[in-house]
Amino acid sequence: MSKFRGGGLRGAAPIFNFFSVSEMAGRPARPTNQKIIDGTFRADRAVAHEMMPEKLEASPPAPRDLSKAAKLEWDSVCAELLRLKMLHRVDLGLLAAYCIEMASYLEETKKIKKEGSVLTIQSKTGEYKMPNPRIAIKNAALKNAQALANQFGFTPSARARINVPAGESESALEKLLRAKMENKNRLRNGNQQD
Image 1 (cartoon, rainbow, N blue to C red):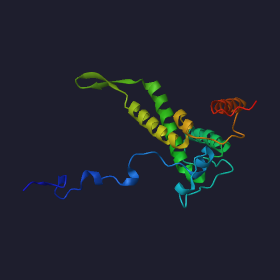
Image 2 (tube, rainbow, N blue to C red):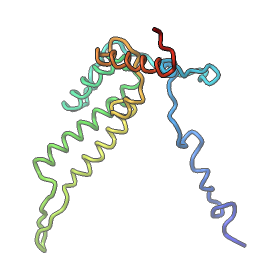
Image 3 (cartoon, rainbow, N blue to C red):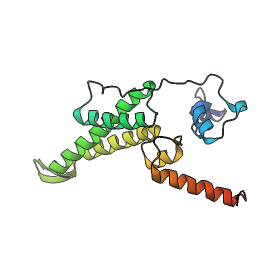
Image 4 (cartoon, rainbow, N blue to C red):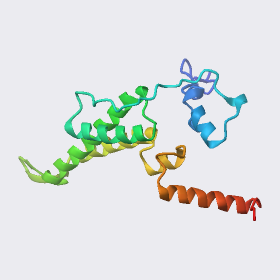
C-alpha cells in the first residue's frame, strides 16, 4: 500500500488547505466611501455592515514611548493625514509602528555612516572584513516601513491608487490639470459644446 493518499502523506493536511479563502491573493477591498468618490459604487455589491471608523478632528499627541525621530515623523504624517481628512482613531497603532520603523531606518543609516558599511574584525588568525550587520537591520526597517506606508498611501504608487475628493487639499495646479483632463474627456466623448 502506498504511503501517499489524497495528494499528501497519511495524516498530513493537503497543501491546498493551508490557506483559507480570505488569505488568498487578490485585489484589496476598497472602502465604500472610496467607491462613491470614484463613481464605482454598486448597492448590490456593498458590504452590509461596513466598519466606519471615527475620523479625528485634531492631531493626537505622539505616544510617549516613541523616540524623538519617531515623534517627528508622527507629527509630520498626522498633520498631512488630518489635512486630507484621512486620520482615523483605529489607524493610530499602525501609524505608530510606521513611525518606529522609519526612525529605526534613519538611526541605523546614521550609525552605518559613522561606522562604515564594511567592518574589519580581529581574530586569532588575523583580521577579516565583513558587511556591517546594521545594514540588514536598516533594510528590514525600511521594508517594514514601506509595507505600512502602502496602507496609508505614503508611497507614490499607493497615492496613485487613492482618490482624494477635490476641495481644500487641491492646489491650483491640480485644479487646472483636473479641468484640463475633464475637457479632454468631453472632447474625446464628443460632448463638446460650442
